[in-house]
Image 1 (cartoon, rainbow, N blue to C red):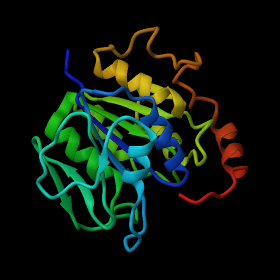
Image 2: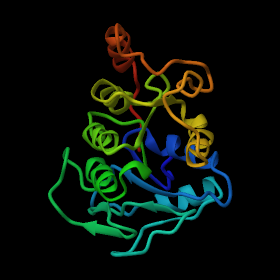
Image 3: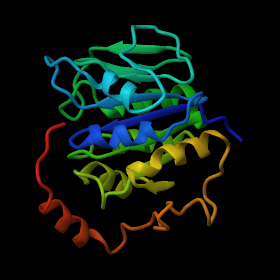
Image 4: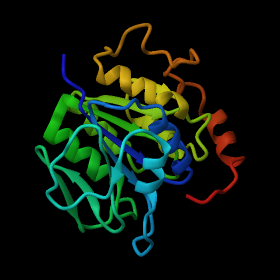
Length: 227
């Protein structure tokens, strides 16, 4: 069984609160490394590392180029740079925007999948449009585990909804259940069994069939919020 030691997380609108809930559920001494992309304006300083550091037991930081990856750390993409993972190191790249964003989620997920293959867990959370869907496909293709925030509770369900439409997602969870779920996966929980395909609230992951109208109705009723 692969050691799940690389967790990549993508979020956009409505994502700060979801990320805070995720990291608050992680234990001290967490044996994996987290990498987070949140869509932010390129000229605006990011306070996300401080927010996440105060929300849970793990320190969060903007990494330096070629910084060595350590377990129990949260590496946050800085403004105007794509966050990439090489073999054991972090890279920052001011490459072309993807899905109108830099940093974007797909480059992080692709790089993690290619470098670490089945050691990766990919997580798509609240956000508009569909950044992260292609990246999550790469994680799945290389044998990693795929997770989305439950679109029914996401402030902006577009991103997890699109990811679920394109990828055979392994787990669906509300934000408050993400930390325990990731801890179980890192500690060796298997996927694709009858029990662990359920969220803690006992909702099955396979909702997309026949639920398109429900999701569109939910989208139309969402109020705007700052990231």
